Image 1 (cartoon, one colour):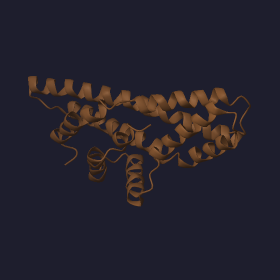
Image 2 (cartoon, rainbow, N blue to C red; image 1 turned 90 degrees about the vertical axis):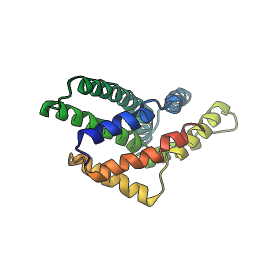
Image 3 (cartoon, rainbow, N blue to C red; image 1 turned 90 degrees about the horizontal axis):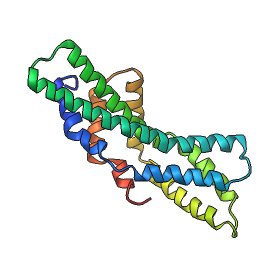
Image 4 (cartoon, rainbow, N blue to C red; image 1 turned 120 degrees about the vertical axis):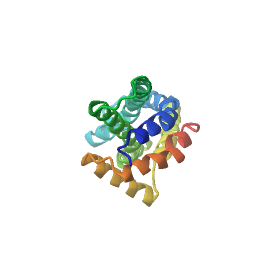
Length: 202
């Protein structure tokens, strides 16, 4: 059961370090790239394009914020496990604290995935605008466009089953339900994490 102390410790302490220690270069590079593009685009953008750009720029920032939180959760959970091996006592307060960390851990992983899945239209809209601003004399902007398009492709999820599973987990999290389905989703991401697949070619 996902509400057992052993299962939560096992997930966070055995699988969690894999996520906590992931490189963040891809997100950091995307953040720098978007900042550079903003500098190169000297004229104001149309409101709908500005909105799409703001969504795009939030992607790496949210991902990095949640990455930091995942690391903190894994470290603090390790301290809780050390405490348990010293006192051998699981109180109701101890379990609720551990369960709360697990829910935050799930939410962080979900948000890192969601900022990629749910922003497709905004990314596509901004890339279309950026393409319209290109010319043969704007070499730096061409370079930025090509690299931004690589990031966009790496973040794009097209598999129907993956998208349906993602929405099911979103609905469970909205209802504050750490169901077995949510747990399996985490395991599936551990077996085939998108960030690991995408981190080397950006």
